[in-house]
Length: 503
Image 1 (tube, one colour):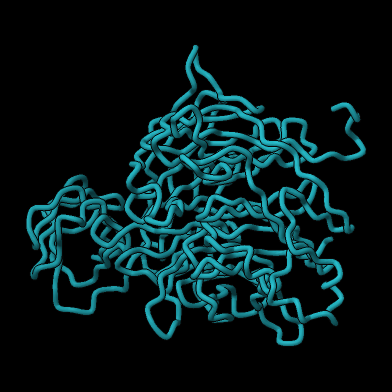
Image 2 (image 1 turned 30 degrees about the horizontal axis):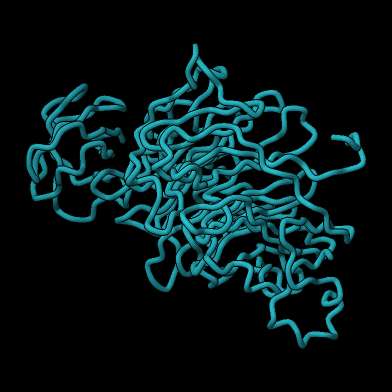
């Protein structure tokens, strides 16, 4: 059964080998790569979310086998789960205050609007309407979320107009005066790079009018004289904040904002910590070294909004609303630098604003209409990356449209996706063995008055407490005793030969 569900459109493909391995419906069962289909485990209640009236999301935070967490993200808060239970402080669930309001957590379709990437005990969070944050963990009940300091960039191109900037002082807080209208109230928080003898940088702290702002000198001392050699920062409340984040070759990638949707930036090599990310484009004299920040705009036919990014063996893969690109060094095998960076179009599939999943064989992303799920594969014949449609034989499986994905490696390689109709679907995923098998999972109970099946609103995977498998966690909307509730639950594993029969 490892071909999974086939749609009616495949009925005539009787000469296809996999046709005889397919099924019309595979419900609440998982197809294994070896061929069998096995009943999935049951879901287990853990805790009702803080506010059942609100849609809530789960994030995975994996530091080690011993320190693996599921994070409940809701209106202005975060709660923590570990070892199948809510982490408590005193007699109450441990809770961290966050800046993200309920209205900004999801779009109108229910797609989570925060993208994240993790390194050790540090997770970077980006949202187009909020300055980037860093989530850090010290212990089970000691978490913090703070605004990340973006040092010395990224910037737009150097000014080519006659507009000058003059400064009331050389260090500390200064008044910046422009010779023409340049500023707006949304520039508070924006960076300025300026060159007198050497380059230095400032951060705008207050807006006065279109020609005057207050800024703090963050770099070396400047001069008070008026100059035309200046650059403005890309990200700010006025221009928008980055919408996607990823790690690539010991750099942090950030891309996409409302004013410059196709702009991308890579930090300095190793230029990130639990407090700062450095995007310095050159040293003070203007000399650009190999480890300096790398920035650019995608070479698209039209302005494409960056939707996601993920590291791949062939480079940094970036998905936009219309096309997919790979950013890498001009020569394969080299590390990317400001002088050798290239961005190359390899597909015009178009992507949804859903973070892709990293699998054992590469990356998988959701198409812009949210009806197709594509693997990114390398074609030796064409020497290029290509998208492979994993839903080709099961186009019906995504009816209701995909809202998000997560990846489970043990006990089976499965890409899990939740949809707008509340159905959880899974893809048994072994491309090397040519196994792509879709299955569907209807959760017991009801989601509303007269409804059928409880409604899965999100999913996340995290290493089990014994380190032997990856647990699949979900938030389920249920209708119980006349009330709509949202429960955090996880799935018990399906039966295998290591389990005692009576268990």
